[in-house]
Amino acid sequence: MSVTFAIIAVLTVASAVAVMTLRNLVHCALSLMLTFVGLAALYLQLNAQFVGFAQILVYVGAVAILIVFAILLTRGVEPPEQKIFSSSSMGGLAVAVAVFAVLAATIGSSSVLHAVLQPSHEVSVRQIGEQLMTRYVLPLEVVGLLLTAALIGAVIIAMRDEEGK
Amino acid sequence: MLFAIGFAGAVSRRNAIIVLIGIELMLNAANLNFIAFWRFGPNPQSLTGIMFVIFSIGVAAAEAAVGLALILAIYRQYKTTNVDQIDSMKG
Image 1 (cartoon, rainbow over the protein chains, first blue to last red):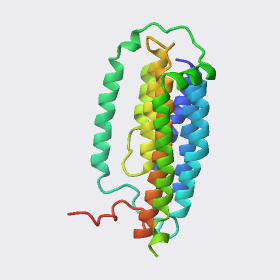
Image 2: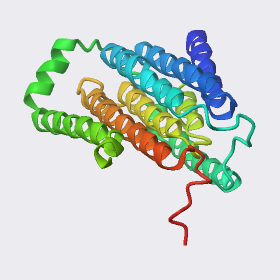
Image 3: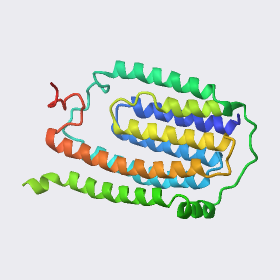
Image 4: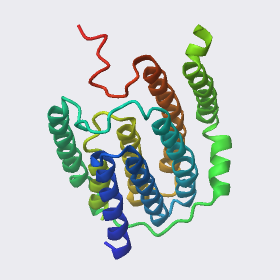
């Protein structure tokens, strides 16, 4: 296990924990960005360059900005000092710990752990594009349709009470 | 090393109680596991892991947009984003 990996993993996990525990929502969004950047760095380290850059573009660029917008739009009326956890947080925490135990056991018993590491294999964007246009055409079209539907749906939901007046 | 990666992914999964952000983190953890198992798995020449993650990122983006729009609509209705106070469908 390399030192770089350890640093990035610790950073990612720490900022993910910070996202869930910080009180200020803007701080949460910022540490969420840090988590996404850490994940992108992990992807790059795992030799998945395209996914790493897509992660930066989509998550750090779009999703984080969207979340910041939502936070800013829904702020103001609420009193800042409340308890930050929902009333059922203890049950949720227990379920989370149980799920984590199951996942850890499954991953720990996976046969991949003992497999020989394959030689590093560069995946070019060209290969990804060829695969997308040949073998994965149908999923690509479905994702395009889904994104269009989500775009229209989000606009309609967010504009609903303009219509209602 | 792989175990630690899975650990990182699964730990981010912890505590995803209320917020949409938790869902995003869970999706990211799953993506990380896809990439890790693809890289260390028996067949990294096939691009299955990468393809799955790309589609998953697309779906996650759509889901985030719709979810935040729903939160905005609910906020206009109830003037709050606290999930404990939105209980008008409680029996």
